[in-house]
Structures are given as structure tokens and as C-alpha cells.
Length: 351
Image (cartoon, rainbow, N blue to C red; front, side, top):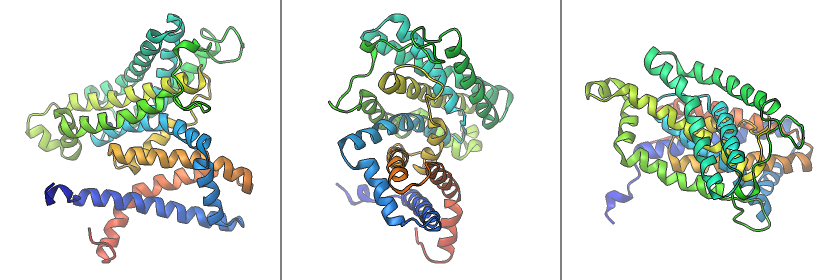
């Protein structure tokens, strides 16, 4: 192996430093909050870690939590790489979950039901993203506004569907009927709830990496995102690249939704997602839109979400600490680039 192959690029170093800086500042500010509330931050973080990775069951639950976050954020990484800000993954996730569940119940179980539900769930998310994508490409409407507003339309539409036409005939609660047990994702670790969706999410990491780094489409995504004028001068179809990158992120958001149904919840409820679509935004940015970085960031956020239960129970800390840490992380990720430049000017960092 040549020496050049071992060289880490300046951009990669910069991305790693920005991610570490964001996490460090988040933990530092969270520690101050703990101290204000007379909580030892070191003990608090130990409980947080134990709650996420303390035994095989806790570890499996953290991986289960990571699954929808990872799938959503991989899709968002592609659109963000193209500088297309899809804020509507939450709505796309719900639509994908609903359509996939309808198909699974309609077919009635078995392997065909499982595959068809996953495919239709993913297509549902794609179609829900297609509207904002068309408005962006054809009319120049800002995708941040359209995708964000489509969240509410999608979530309320699904809530209406499970309250009326697709309400469970068994429970009469505002939830869909349960999918057939034979079409659920198989458990891969006996004694836990760890299901095949985890393997699916991890398998998508190299797929998305290959898509971004080894295909013409990935090259176009990066060029359009970094320098649209150069892309236009080079004859690239900018509108088509934007459209495909946005609907691809919707496709994975829809897949995340139906995976959550078929692996864990087995029916669609109004509380299907605790905000996986929004968490995916933080994860994609923290991972610098790199699939491997996104995978690590997904595990980190999932660990915080699951570990906080143990933390809240043992130290009497409100569960809102998770929202606080996510919010801080988002702020510091956005601020990391100017912070790194400041540290470079002061001679603290040399990248």
C-alpha cells in the first residue's frame, strides 16, 4: 500500500475536527446544566453510557433506535450534499409507513407481503418528496419551506387515515390494524427485539457511499452542491440532479418509516416517530454528509436518546435533557466551521 493511500485529506481532517468540537462543546454545556441542578456530570454521563450500552438488551435497544435515524440521515446526506435542504423527512417517513402498512395488510402476510411493503413504503416517501422537488426545479420555490410544511400535511393525513378509513377494527383506537406476523422483519438476536432492519440500515451505508463516491450521479451531486455555476458551464442537468437527490432522500425516509412499523411497532400510530426525521438532520450535518460519519453520528444520537431513560430514572433528571442535547448539538454543528476558522487564525489549530 502506497504512502499516498494512507494520507488523510485536509477536508476529512477538518470534518473530523468539526464533529469532535461540536460533541465536546455539547457535552461541556450539558455539564454546566447538570452542575446548576446539583448533578455530578461525570456520574451522569456514566449512567448515560450504561443506559445505552450496559448489557446486551440495552445495546440491542440502542441499535434498534439507531435504525430509522440512520436510514433517514443517509438519504438526507445525499440531498444536503447537493445543497438541497430537505426538512420534510418526518412527513415522508409517516407517509411511507402508512402506505407500506396498507400493502402488508392487503396482501395478507408472507415474504411477498414483506418485500412489497418495504418497496411501497419507500416509494411513498419518494412521492411525498416529489412535490417539493418539482416546485423547486420548475418554479424555483424554496424547498426548505415546502418540505417543512409538507411535514404537517403528511402527519395529519396519516392521523386522519388511522382515525377513520384505516382505523383498527380490533382495538378501535386511532391506529391501523396490525400487520400480519409473517410479514414482520425477523428478529436476529434471540431474547431481544433486534430485527433485520438493523442489517438493512447498515447495508445502506456502503451503498450510499458507493453512490456518492463512485458514480456519475454522486459526482454531479457534489459539483452541483459545491459550484452550480461550474456545473452549468459543464453542461450538467442541474434541475434533474436536484430533483433526484431530493426524492432519493424521501425514498429513504419512507423506507425508515415502514422499517419501524415492520420491525418494532407492527402498526401505524400517531406516535410512530419521536422526531426521527428531524433528528436525521442533526445526524447528517454532524456526520458531514459522509455515510460512515452519518453511521457513527446515528449511533451517538441513539445512545443519548436511550441512555437518557436510565439517567432520568437514576438521577431524577427530566427526559427533556435529550432535546436539550440535540438542540445544542445542532447549534454547535452549524457554528463549527466559523469556530474552526477562529481557532486557525489564533494558531490553536493547524489543518
